[in-house]
Length: 188
Image 1 (spheres, rainbow, N blue to C red):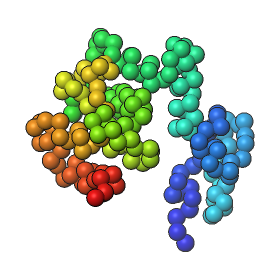
Image 2: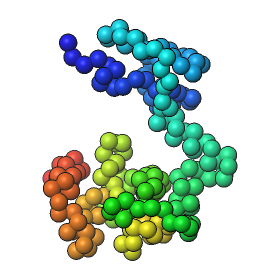
Image 3: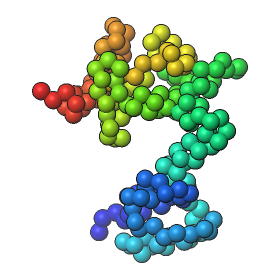
């Protein structure tokens, strides 16, 4: 027998909204309990008194609604505005020089740009492929995260910005990503 659904997908998540997950999957049983018992419908294993994690889609909706209530702006606009403000002390950086919250900043910017490359105008709709759209720092300063310093680029356009980027994208991982991108989006 193969892996159970719980082993494959993990435990279900807690939902506060009719998010994409709830709308696409009809196997939910509603509850208002803090701790729940879960029965795997494949192996019938029982997981008792489980505190469920919050669904990522519900977390995104919650963040968006909170930002709109507090600031009158979308969550993405709020994140980008906060990233543009001077930080004292500055946000710590990772080993590549990006601020620790750059993933959130980049996602907010790319969503704001509808995952569309500003050079070749390719738009990527598939969420699994949106990693091929990057946030480029125009001035090459990874700590300058104001929206005016960003450019939304596909991985291919980003890899060709200048000699520095051509060298940075000449690693095995980056070459593999470029090859996958070209096979999906640059069909001859």
